[in-house]
Image 1 (cartoon, rainbow, N blue to C red):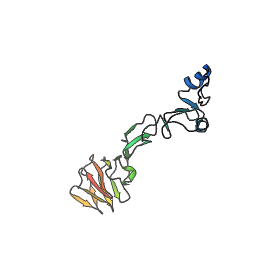
Image 2: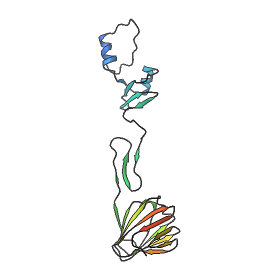
Image 3: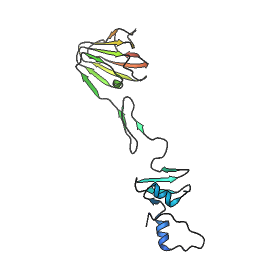
Image 4: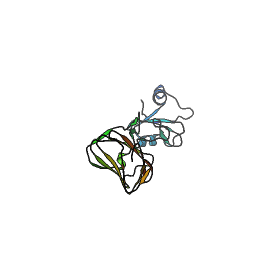
Length: 198
């Protein structure tokens, strides 16, 4: 039966039919309860040996060490970064764009690193503050929709530039209602506004 262990024959040994079934036909892939049982049965393994561990449901092959057959290569996990959702460590991995829209009625809003990749819609007359605490990773941005009557982008230590103006302690105004802008990080605490501002 499978899982009977490992057997080595010596010259002159009789090979019984039961041993052919148990050790050869049924154990082309050797079956063990776990790594301890495998080590006890095999001693020093040889390159090319294949084993199945019933405690973890893992198929492994021996090269210079036992390695999972089901997890080849160097990738151990796929993690979604800014602007993406999903990821995983096994099976089918899906990564998709995080395009959720957040609507705010606030009259003041301070951007944070968590806003990177987000879509923000403001329905009130709002002042959005970009500060040195915003800390978007370089190359990340936030999309802002102005559905209110006025929208101002102000700064608290960070540099923002757009419409031919650069300020570290000032305000830029979004051109018109229903306009949209992007705030893009070009360097640490340094942002560009893409869109109609003055």
